[in-house]
Image (cartoon, rainbow, N blue to C red; front, side, top):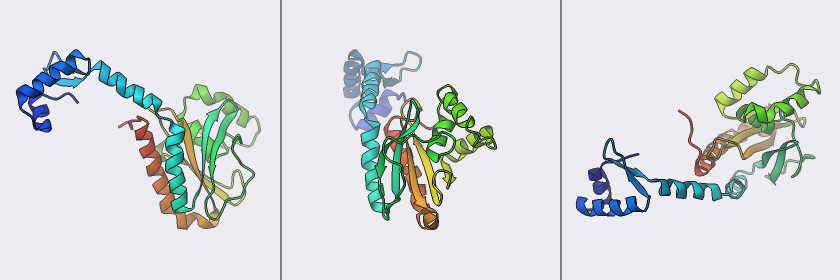
Length: 226
């Protein structure tokens, strides 16, 4: 936010003339700019470029993997991470919890867009042009004819997560959250898998996972829309 000279000097606890000299030097380097209409000072193009370059170097996978590994270790929940590949949502990381959740899924498994909690996150939040072929592919199976896609998308966007019970594996429920990046895209989804009997015990932990994904998104530069 652009600020007047006096406010900057007060925040720095420095004399105003000294702060003014520093700001003039920063303006010369492009790190600060003075707005012509108000005389206030704001970040300059060099500072913005530096900030964007730093965000671009952040590895979403490494950032999420470390945080989710700690989360799984602490809560005992089984976590999978997925990215949207050419064939569909593809598992890129599997973190086994306690007790382990045994399925045929592993790293490299491609999940259906409409039939999995993971896939439904991409369906709801990614641009339609990037998912329409996968939607058509799923609809062609005849398994999803009863789905109201408009209502489903609105529900997921409203609640911020997707949940399925036994769609992929009988007796197994999945809750998925998005991780957004600077551009509001989804480099990764995070899905917690658990047997039905564990629902009450881990409800608070699943909510905590949603908060964690929100924090990771903000670290990647995402700003929630008001």
